[in-house]
Structure formats: structure tokens, C-alpha cells
Picture 1 (cartoon, helix red, strand yellow):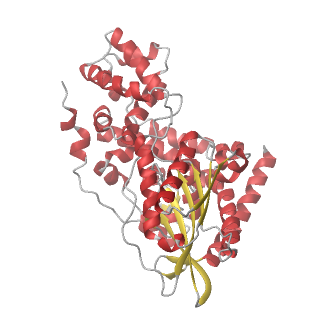
Picture 2 (cartoon, rainbow, N blue to C red):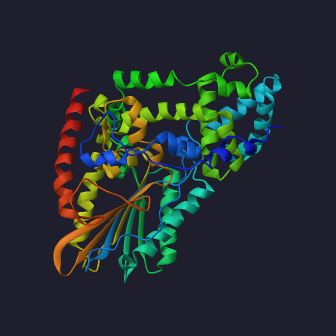
Picture 3 (cartoon, rainbow, N blue to C red):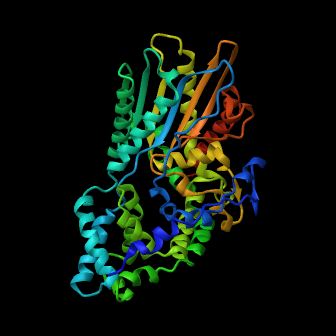
Length: 460
């Protein structure tokens, strides 16, 4: 028997994390972005679960925040989030993995580690079968924790009669995320007036990736140049070694009804998603089937595609960020209307929108949050400036608005995943920005984006 807990994950989790600050082959739209260079190799060696990319489950910030300028009090929160942790998704990877393991077992094609993994996976499959992409128990817990932290940090927003308006996409895991979040807020503030809705009517600015412009947005990150650059990195990935750890004859996979590519992707997904189920055994298998250099190479190749799809990539002429244009435009409309009525009896104090990674990722790049707006020429540097694990399960933006009786300026702070985040705007004081400056900077970018979307639409 392999003692997998003496391997991979637990050893690597002891490696100290570090950040390397430098600027190599990066053209930055804002000189300050260079300080956000993060050595992704060091990060992933210290925490292998980050190699799971979008399946990464992180701890959300809940510590003390920088005090607001004197006289300013919080009055309104605009919230946009990805759903909570979920089961693996996409063509039901659990069914795929179970089917290939059972067939390999019946034909004597599993190695000792393969048989061990099959025994483990039998229990996983019993629970996960039919739950493709469903919200997990950890997802429910995480979401409730985010809501509690919001209430604790900004009690002034909830003072008196408070109204919250929440919208979600029509995907079950997103609707359940919204319901859990609002239920927790309601338990914190019994007087909270909650209105929740989920409808295709709002999809264009909840998740443009699935809206009327989906054809444009889904093609935006795919160009021959982008595909070729990503393929060059995939060619460096050793596809045989991980499979050889589970299957006696790797060529046996090529003759199966289930394609080898689907087997590889399915195994990767169910192991990466083990962290979403708080499954420590599955997390250990992740780093056993794919040792460090192998899971890093696989992650880097996947991550390059993530950047081309959603980032400020010169290869795609920055079209990936167009997925955020409608999100930002609607947020400005809603926020202006809610702030204008903040003293009325029917005021809305919280405006919450629940969506997916395909909304959060382009929004990070469009807003250039924490340097995620970097323009990267060298594909080998993408990993150090734009990482898919930054869009972890439950990732969220909290725009918290403040006002003062002494000044007409409305100011705000941005929290990303509960931590104070930066924007390429002048600060009123540390971590605080004027709402007027936000609109002055991003308004023209939204207009330009709308023009580009129209031009692309007309060219199709």
C-alpha cells in the first residue's frame, strides 16, 4: 500500500510561501501594476491546491480594515460574487472516472496505486454521482461565513430598517449561494428586508458570457495566435507519467470508448475538486498522481488560456475584458440610483449579484484590481501576473460606500475576497476612492467597450 500522506501534498504544504517583486517583459497600463508580480511557482509549491485553478478554496479575509477618513460612515454595499465551492463539473467527470476505473479493474489494467485510488473513489462516486457542479457542503459554509463577516464589519449599513436586493443566475448552485448568503444576513439582522430573484432577464449583465453577446465573448479569447501559444505549453506537459501511475499500459487508454483526453481531464477535475469537498485523501491523491513539476506544468498551460480568455492580452487585443463591460455599466446605474435615494424610506442599502467565474475573471481584469490589468507580451510571464486561482470558489467584490455630513464626496473602498484591494485611481486616503473618480475613469472604458462589442457583432 502507498502511504500517500507521506507524499506530495503534506510535504509541500510545509514549504514557506514567498513573493518575488520584479517586472520582466511586462508592459503595464499602470506603473503600479509591477509591484503585484507574484512568483506563481513559489506560490503553488507552497500550496499545491492552487494548481486546481478555479477549484481552489481559499480562506476569506476577516481581519481589521483600514479606518475610514474622519467623519465618513458606511451607508451602502454593492456586491458581486462567484458561487460557493462545488462538485467537479463539465460532462460529469465523476461518471467518466468511475467508468474507466471499473473497466480497467475488470481487465487487470490498474497498477497498485490505481487499485488503491479506485477503492477510494468508490466512496466519492457514491456521494458525487449526479451532482455535476452542485454546491457542496463547504460551499454553503463559506458563503455564510462571508455574509457574517460583512455584517460584523459594516454594522452601520444595517442600522435601522435595511433593504437588500439580490439577483442570481438561474443555475442551481448560484441560486443556492444567494439563498444561503441572504439567509445568514437575515439571521444576523432579523429586520432585514430581503428581495431575491433569479431570471434570464438579467443574464446580460449578471454573466455576459451566457447572455445575448455570448457568441462574441466566447470567441474573444480564442485566436490562432492564442491557441498556438497555449499549445506550446501543453506540449511541455507529460501526459503519460500521471496515467502510468494508475494504469499498467497507458496505450490501453487509447482504445477505449471514453477518449483519453476525457479520462485525463476527468481525473484532474475530481482530484482538484477534492478541496471543495474537504476531502483530504483526494487532495493527497492530487499531488501523488501529479507530482510537483507535473501539476505545475499542467496548471501553467491551463492558466495561459485563462489569461487569453479574460485578461488584457495583446494577442487577443484585450477582447477578454469585454465580458465585464455590461457588468460595470449596470453596477454604475444601480449604485447611482441607490445612493440618490439612500435617505428615502424605500432606500436600498445592499445590492447583491451572484454569478460565476466567467463574470469575476473579466471584471478583475477590466477594473485592473491589484494589478490584474497587466499587459503581458511574454507567455512565460503570464503565470506571475495573472493567475486563475485568484478567482477561487466564492470569490467576491465588495464595494463599500461611505458619506460624511462635512463633504459632498461619496467615497468607497473595495474588498476582494475580504481583503483590501487597489484600483488605478487616486486615493482620498489609504484604500479609499471617490465614486466620481471611479465613474470618470471607467465610464469612458465602458463606452469604448460597448463600441467594440457592437463592431464585433456587426463583423460576424
